[in-house]
Length: 277
Image 1 (cartoon, one colour):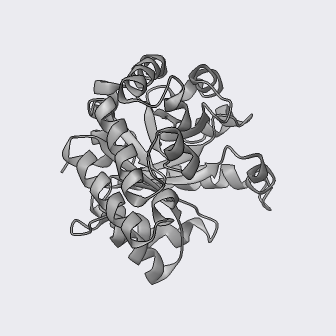
Image 2: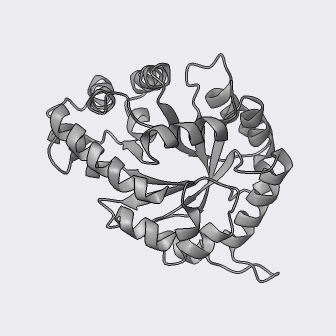
């Protein structure tokens, strides 16, 4: 298998950098005429994939919306992930895992072990137990050609105070994480590395943060329902062209919830997202 960075670059070149979120909340399933069950969540994900005719670079299932159904939700998440990857669509599982020692190893094995039914291409993590605590996690992901997206600057306003807090050396928490991610990517090789970052499209310091992450793919949530547009991503992260992934979730239903409606919306957003190349 080729590296995560190589696979994602190829997918972006083929389809656009648009990342489509799969967020089957109770209200979203209701708006789509689907039952608020694990099966309804799977049908929604499948509807999105089929609407796009599997011509997507990457999808981002929000794991919480599947976990809420217990074991049946995990089962359909496994099925959706397998379906997507079998049709050439990469999967970024949004679980925001982060822990230490053997627990971090266990999380990584769950999502990156070749034998795991949850096997994904990439996973979101947080580093608030210390970036170094993610080392075993990163090692397993990299050994299996997976990608890791570390939350650096989230799109929610509640995160600003913590993420912009200053350390003793004068760096903000976000800047410190950006530097450590860049240094860790450099140990893998030159060019874009397997450790990406989450930087909200609504953040006023998005450009500065993106500049501090020159070897990382950047997942940019906040497009659509949270108020940002793809033009905002282009304006706020000009140095990240070719490596920023605008994430759209609820907004894929902007023109309606039928397969045809979703196809129209996704195609239009893909064309807009190509401006980020």
